[in-house]
Length: 422
Ligand code: BJ8
Image (cartoon, rainbow, N blue to C red; front, top):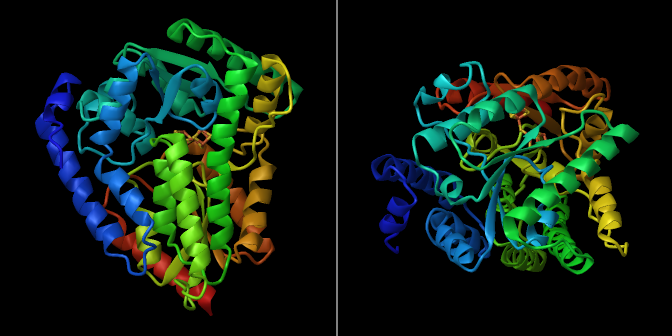
């Protein structure tokens, strides 16, 4: 492996803490992913990306910066990658999926904040994230109250914060708000990059992002097959890498994986295993706790109704328009279909879950809500009733990034799997 220590040092990382984080994640990866049997050979690409996630990919970003590109960090799938790419920039997801065992964040945010938000503070305060340190702009978005208020504090620990407003209702005014926010964001990016949004660069970037979403959609469709050849863990990993990798290279790698799976239709990973649809809060890398428990308890995950899954990639943006204004309308139309639980009412998310249960032949739904996450915890209660009325088994797991509750969760998941297999 190349020595990236000088690069990390120049980015201002705390090398000792960073070493410890890399070592822990490396071990987890070995135990969780590399120990799986029957993995497609094409997963080697994604293993390589993970191995180099703080190395080669960061070097690529820093090289791109030298050529004049800007790095835009995001925390939500509502931030339009199409506009970022069109304006000579690279979009990088900054959500982290690990706790660092520190209470440093409590100087800025309350203790009863979800792990996703807490980790964004910890990774910055403990200086272990080369992505945060490489950004030219960090985009926060007003989605849940936790994030909305946290960004007010986050701007005190980073020097390049931009906050985007996001509607909470899918009415006409919501579309107008999102459009005005995407136009304001375009202007801010144009100022940062010195580039202008044009029909040509926007159409090109829309196609790049559409291709990426289509490749994942192709992979998802293969998972509905009873001879599924890819684990939920590997699928989640690919969805997580979606937020870091070069989009065109990523699309090529996912399509190659799909080609391989299509050729090996006779093999199967399912073998009478219970088929689980996972739904709920996004799982940022390296948050693999729940999928790992599920897939080591006699079940296979066949779909994810999550932003690190189908919710994040559903629907394409139409390139059918001849002005940037109309193309932005098309972008707004696509993004307003994201059924995040910060919207009210949010019956469409329930419909998505039901549709996915059918599409992937799932035997039951395991819902994942981070502790202190109000939007997803609320929906878990009402969705349980509605899904059980339709005889769709449902289990809600509320947890955080710690490993302390692993045994207890495993017992609950094993009992659920036993029940739905009968
Ligand atoms: S579009 S799901 S990525 S907001 S877990 S921080 S909701 S308290 S993440 Fe999300 Fe965008 Fe929606 Fe998707 Fe708040 Fe809940 Fe924490 Fe959450």
